[in-house]
Image (cartoon, rainbow, N blue to C red; front, side):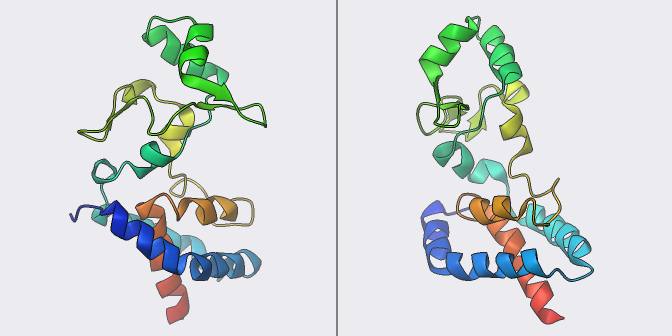
Length: 168
């Protein structure tokens, strides 16, 4: 399995982001009948090619949204009060969500790309990159559009779907 080169990935995304977003917008408006089957096959193929521990770009560049349950669970594990946990690690964004104060994530071990609280990680992290569990419909297309910039797996998935859809 090849290692993800984040510098190269960022350049590729920079040059192809517009065309991929346009493709996703077209899919949003008019989907082929078998899109979900194409997505499932592309997803399976993508995970044979990408290992998240080679990358961890999501943990290096994004912040999960912490739910009340996430804060409760993680602060307990760290033997901190919820208030102290929030004060030390989180801030409230303009929408009222609790987010990491810094990037990369404070729980990411940069030597191994492993999460120090993996078993307790926020729900947002556990579900990322979200594309395996969500259908490619209008409700979630924004997620694919956003994540192609941060997640090589999402980018590769969309590229594979684009190839299959254009074949037909």
